[in-house]
Image (tube, rainbow, N blue to C red; front, side, top):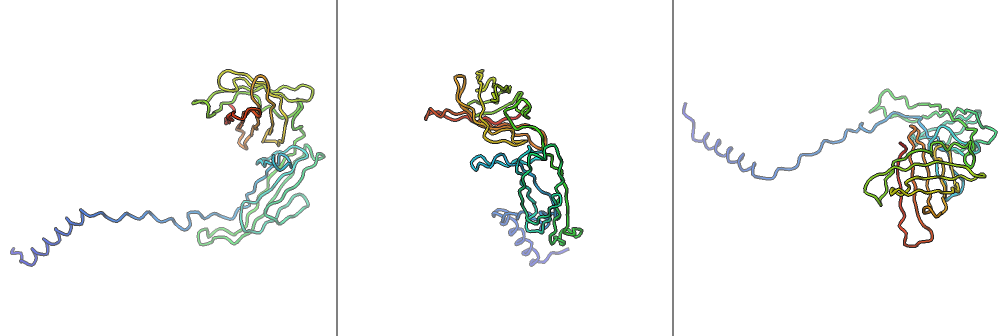
Amino acid sequence: MEIKKSTWIVMLLTILLVLSSCGKEQPPVMEEAEEPCDCATEVSAEFLMEELTTPIPSLTKYTETDTIFKGKNVRFTALEENAEYTWYLGAEVVTDQQITRYFDDVLAGTNHTISLAVQKTPNTNCLPNDDGYDSISKTLHVSNLPIYNSPDAILGPVEGDFRVKSAHLPDSFDIHIDVTYQVGDVYFNIENYDGLGSNCIQQARPTGSNYRQMFGFYGVSTMQCDAMQGDVHIRMDGIVEMDFTFFNPNDPNYVERQYLGRKL
């Protein structure tokens, strides 16, 4: 079959066009656009319960918890933004997103049901089954245990072996902590406190504490080791974490050493 001259010309031009386009830099492929419903969530009444360590502003720390010491303030915060809130705390009804309540010593050993109902216009375009309403109830326990300075205090999680990391050593190392009591004072006996085999006895001066932030304390400088400050935190999942900083207030050239770790 005879091919017309015009057809040959068209084929040749097509081949040349393909070859030339392969040598050019192609425009980048556009990333896949984020779907508008990827971040959509149903209206939720989830909220935080957080115990205050101390009302002293410089030492204030809130810790998420389901158990508190007696005589403590607790902050309740709804996580859903821009909604209608209805809190039920016993016979009390409150409509703010965040509230704080004080649990007196007389409430020690008791449980308290904290309920929250949230209503908000739902995103029915992405979540057609969301009615815009949710409610959650949680139980808060008020402990009868003392905070510190007593053998009955809940300092057990502070004792034991911790694996820590500090910038002054290339690898992590293990320390051991024992707690003793002498005439109302708390002493922390720390073995291998510097990762180099040194031991340390610190008389702790508690500066603030709650049930899960076990203590914020200031340890005085002794002959055995430098001064230190820090705390031990019991997470909601039961893992115990520590954050200590060793320092020397009398040496302006001393480089502070922060120890971050977890109980073994």
